[in-house]
Image (cartoon, rainbow over all chains, first blue to last red):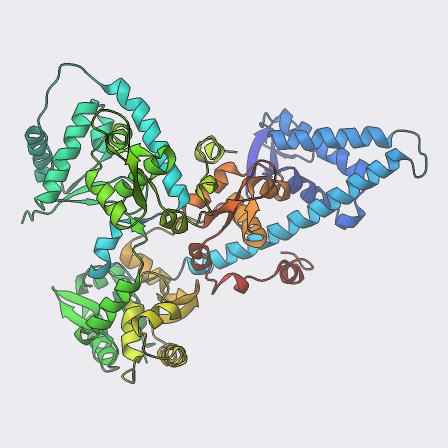
Length: 256
Length: 180
Length: 180
């Protein structure tokens, strides 16, 4: 399941010579824990048995490699790197049994092992979900029927929908002020005719079509009223299949 | 009993189809199968399936075939569809509700300022669904009615109280498309 | 074979339902019928219908019952509907979802602790797909929002309900020793 990236690079560890360029396979890691798990697996050691100094070196080496390849290293990787460097520096201090330093290192080790074990468990859970999803995507529920058609134009709402709706309105509101043009006039009747004309040559129009044309606030409001009127006259249907999807304006008049 | 040849695959298509399934469509899906075989399979499927006397039957309709419930179950179906809570809100209702939730108490003209469209009929719907209620009048010219959300609103959206409602700032990291 | 009692009416409802049909809904439609009778009828219907080995079967999913096609016909259906394979969730989304499913209700920072990476934009995707929902606030400093899975989550992954999820310990036994 891990996605892999094959890339051309100048020089790197364990490269294969291929047409005088080096081809390196680099796995993409979701985060520092992913990378650590990978390094541990490569050594075929038990998570409980990890040698901190060794794993820290490998981790830092890998980050160097990514840097050489000009791959942007996400902040989380750097935080872990800093932590590992810190722990390594502590380990270099002269040994003193049961000292504070030793306790600190042991504590860190225990935490890291626990974090890695947890992380691995959830990676397995993700794998299980992946398998289940694959099976589920091959079964189909029934297609829409007349009973549902009316419902389909509505969406069932969650708190997230509510917040997003508000967020979008605020954004829209900010933009609408810029769009205002003084001294223009347009009537609902004119817009109505325009929409009818458009629908006589095509089956449906997306609502966003009117926005993309950079019309003024006034035009948009008038367009909206024209659409409401056409809906009332049963000339068009407004269809939105899911929240936040574009609204499709569909003609109800049969052309054939 | 449906496992012979294309019987079950065709039944599966009838099940997911939104329009009547036509022989021409079947021929398109199975270009190598002679039309006659498709016709026979379909005919046999219809007679086999309908002999089950199930609540659902295959009917020849509008130049094709379609799975539909039999008319005698309409009353049961209607009763069932009525049990579905009217938990569904139109996008317009959702927007209006969002403004009211975050800006309450708020007047109709204030809602209209933010939404950019007239919200009168949506307000009525929300009042009917008991998601909003009147909250006195604003002390400005015309003394317009103000609206706020109800306890039903909190229940509907699974909020313990209004403070449970995420703030815009809070969901910023979730809502902004910046990414990881 | 489906004409006994409420068998066929329930089959008709299963056919028109867009969400899994629950016993609670059936009880609402038939308030006078004892729940036990409804349960028995439903169980019998499922076993009778599924014994037909038709392309369509009744499955227990997301806390209810649902008619769906059987997986083996998805190629035929796809050819008929001319659809592309549906987009699957990204690895990041699946991992985040796994943490939420097993640790719910859980905050973003708790998810981040386990995943080791920022999950903000993944959370957004999952909210949009209605696979997760907000679940109130945690009673700690800052009162962060908590998240949990939805009914759509169970449906998407073919789970009867959350208890249908294997435990993390069970997963370990199955997956860890041999690997891939």
